[in-house]
Image (cartoon, rainbow, N blue to C red; front, top):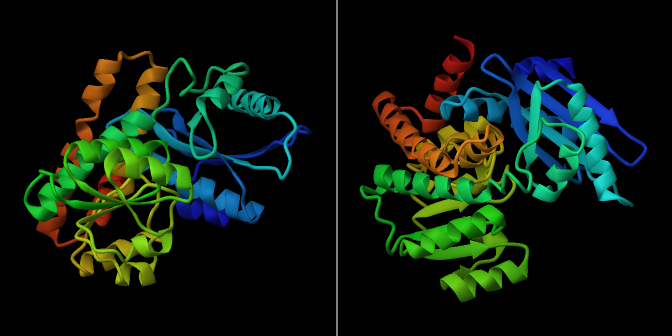
Length: 338
């Protein structure tokens, strides 16, 4: 366990359980720049080790995300292992809120995969160290706005224009962020290829955006201009990368690469990669600024940092003949530790 923490440069790892069924993990990666902020996942895991690994990996990404977004925050992540049976969901999240309160503000939690603003409301009954409540609003819309702006910056860098009209964009995952992104891309004139495990979401995308449905297992090999992973991570391994037929990868998913070193394989194939923790920072910007009571207009203005940072990374990567992921990691490390 300590070896994994040392490899990730993790500050602390907290575990908690409660008779109501709570089994929770909070990974705090970095707090030098400010409190660690990161979402709370409520998912099933193959085993406890997988849940801990997920929390550690995501917490490190949150530190980089906050640093490159220019926010006074560190990175953290919470994972609640979904029990096979749950009698009272509100009781579980209130128990989690009591656990968060014991951390004395070093970690602020928020929505993530499997959780909602209603869950955050339950947590808020026990602690003030929570955002994305019903009062704060769901961050999905701002995540999608940031990814949309990031896709335009990626298109400019790879295809020579940020005009998305007529571009074929493949979206993997039509959750809250993926669907909102599809709406914006459709309005910009993009041709959409979509996959999702929920047939209802697929049908809505077909009806509202004229999207072309593609089986999940076929989407990664379907010809397109930009592939946009917007579901869970680790979808791109060496085998998948070898069969991609796109010019760029730019999406909302955290950690779409199975391992960070795979960014060099994308680079070798001439596929431009928009680092996930840069392009999907809109949700974090919303979560932090709404927690601070910042006006919505200010939050929207802060999203302009995302395409600016991507353009900067792409330029550095081209000049240094490195992948944008390598440049982003080095830039974030300097901000965090120098």
